Length: 314
Image 1 (cartoon, rainbow, N blue to C red):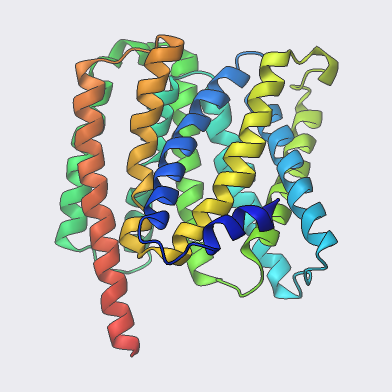
Image 2 (image 1 turned 135 degrees about the vertical axis):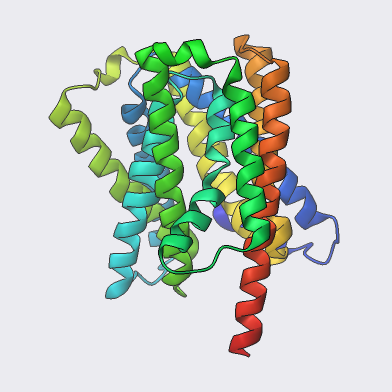
C-alpha cells in the first residue's frame, strides 16, 4: 500500500502542482482527524483510543516493511526511536487525544498549532538568543490566545475544561521537544519504518498505562462509531497522510511544507461547528487568526535562523 501511494506521487514529481496538492491534503485531512478524535472519545477514554490507533497503524507499518525486507534500525537508532515514541506519540498524541474529550476539537487544534512557540522558548533556555521577529510573533500569538479565551473565562471554573486545556498544552510541549530531538538526531534509515516502530512502542506504553490505572473499557463494549473513528484515524490520519506528509517534506521547501499547521485549526474549527455544533464565535475566529499570524512570524524567525546556521556551516 505504501509503495502504491508513494509511486502515485513519485511518478509525477515533475508536475509543479502535485507537491502543493499533497500539502493541501495534509492540511485538510490532519484537520479532520481532530473531528474523528472528538467523535471517538465520546465513548471511550482518550488514552485507550490513542493506544488502539497507534497499535493498529504501527503494526501495519511494521508488517509491510517486514515483507519488503527493509533493514531494521541498528544500535543507537533504537534509542532515537524509543525517545521519539515517548515524546511524539505516547505523550503528545496521547495527551492531545485525551484532552479533546473535555474541549472542542477546534480549540484543541488551535492549541496544538502553538508548538513552535515552545521551540523558541526551549531554545532560549538552552542559551540561544531570541530574534526580535520571534519575540514579536510570541507576543502576537499570546494576544490571539487571550482573545480566544476571553469568552471561555467562566469555563475555567469547570475542572474538566481546565484538565482538557492542561493536557493539550502539555501535548504541544512534548511535540516541541520531539521536533528538536528529531532535528538533532536525524538518521538515514526509513522514516516510514521508524514511524511504525514509534507508534507500536507507544501503543504498548499506553496500553500499560490503561491497565495500571484501570481506565480502559472492554473492547466488546466499544461502539461502532468509535471503531469507525479509529479506522479513519489509522488509515487516513496515520498511514496515508503521514506518507504524503513525508513526500511534502522531500519535495517542498521547509517554509512551504510547514503551512499545513495553519490549515489544521481552520478545518477543525469549521468542521467542529458543522458536525458537533461547537461554538464558532467572533473571539475564536479573530483570536485564531491573530494566533496563526503570530505563529507564522515565529516560524519565519526559525527559518531565518536555520538559513544563517547553514551559511556559517558552509
